[in-house]
Length: 268
Image 1 (cartoon, rainbow, N blue to C red):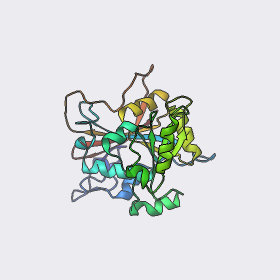
Image 2: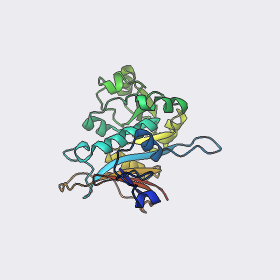
Image 3: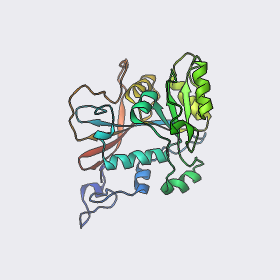
Image 4: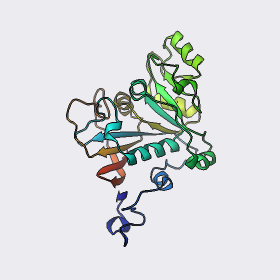
């Protein structure tokens, strides 16, 4: 792993022996280094405000998936960053279709981050928050029946009462975040913050990310650029209608390993 941006003396000039200091070229970064590289903003004087980051992967030709899943275009280091981002978050927000396609399971506790999470007042593991209008989910899955932290279901006030009852019977906590059937992204962020979840992470999928972008509630994008070409008709990382004016983000950091680029972009 090496740091390409921000540029430092260590980035430009590796130390003797093939390893460098802060830049880290020629060696695997430890979890503490990754956690520092992806730390959430420090709370301001008025206390913590919600900060929503997305973590996505894309091939060189813009595909967010291959055969309907993101794993084939990922890497071992990408998955270590994936795990680190989860370990830093209060809650992981994910769309129902991604839950179905990726076979989502509850977030697990990581012994390496236990002390850090305890010091930050966080639960042993982040909660998973599923965004769904229809609640068309298999509530017998471990994601709902046996998580360390109860799974949240974000839906609208007009959601089918029988599906809400099924979700609650399975152990999920249903959170209203919209006046109709669907979820309003801004309301979802506010509802999660009201529950004490201010370090927010979304892992998509593309439709959900497109809704968050269109609503203007995304603060940061952690994008892995995979050195692969897939062609075909795979989705991009964000779908749905285009925004009226493109959202401009600024590069915060960029790491590289084995041709994969691990970037962070924040609101400019």
